[in-house]
Image 1 (cartoon, rainbow, N blue to C red):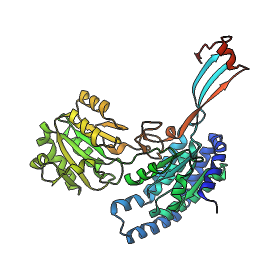
Image 2: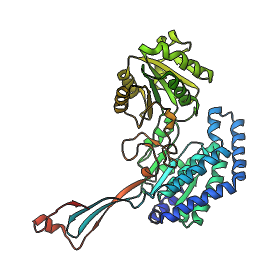
Image 3: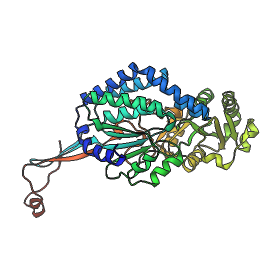
Length: 426
C-alpha cells in the first residue's frame, strides 16, 4: 500500500492532467456523483447510523452529533449544492488580462487550478461531498481527511464519489482519502507535492496544522462572531436575527457568540432579546450592567474571547458603534460580524471599520456560507487576507499563470534600446 508521501507525489505529477480536463468532463463527474449518491443512499444512511450509534455510545455531545448526521435532508442539500456547482461557469482557463507588450509580443494572465489540495475537515459527512465537488469542478486534485467520528459514512461517500469521477474520465489519482490520524503528520511533510492545506476544526487543531507544516495553509482557527444591536435597531428584527444567529446551527463557526448592545437603548432592547434567547434554551451571560436590566448569568472577561459552539451567548453594553467596532476588532476572530440598525450612516461606518471577512447589516451571521453565497458550496471559510477570504468556493481554488506569445523577441534588444515596450491592453 502506497504511503501518503507516495500518493501526494504521484498526484502532483497527475495534477496538470486534471487541470487540463474539459469542463464538460468535470461537470459530468459531478452529475454522476449526484446520481450515485441518490442511487446508493440506503448504504450511506446505514453507514451513518453506525457512526451515530458509536458516537452515542462514546457520549459525544448532542451539538457535535448534529454535525455527524447525514440524512435525507443533508442528502438533498448536497445534491442541490452539486447542481449549483455544475451550473457555475468554469473557473479554469479564464483570461484575466491580455496586454500587448510590443508588436508580436502578447502577455496573457490566465486562471488555473492550484494543483494538489489537502483538506482536513471536521466530522461532517456533507463537507466531504462539498469539498470533493468544488475541487473537481475547479480542476484540482485533493487529499481528503475527515473526522474519525464519521469514518464509515465518509468511506461510503468517498468510494461513490471517486468511482463516479473516474467513470466520467478523470484520472484515478484525482482524489485520495486518508483515514488514519497518523497519516496527517505525514501529509504535513509533503511540502514538495501538496500546494495548499485547508484545515477545518478546532482552534487548537488548526493552530497545530499551521505550526507543523511548510505547506501554505488557508482557513480560520476561530469563529468568535458578534452582533452589535444599535440604538436605531428595529426590535423585532433584532430579536429574530439574534435568535437565528445563535440557535439555527449552534455548533457552526458562524454562530454568534457575543452580543453588543448600545447602552442608551439597552432598557428597551435587552429584555425581549434575552427572553427570546432563554426561551430557546440559551444560557445568557451578561455584565453587571446587563444583569441589572435582564436576569442572566454573570459574564467574565474570558467570555469575550471564547467560541462556545454551544447554547451560550455573552452580552455587553457599549456606548455606540465606535466602541462596538473596537471590541470586535480586539476580541473577534475576523470571521463574520453584524450590525442591526436602521441608520445607514452607522451601518456604513461599522461595515467599513470592522476588520472581518464578512460584515452584515440587519441579517444573521449564519449567512456566512458558500452555498448561501451562491458558490455551490465551500471548502471552508478563510480569515486570511491573502488569496481567498470568507467562504471559499471555486474562485478561491484557482490561481493564475502568465503566458507570453512572442515572435522571436529577445530581452537584449530591449535592454540596448533597439526595441521598446508600448504596453496596450487588448
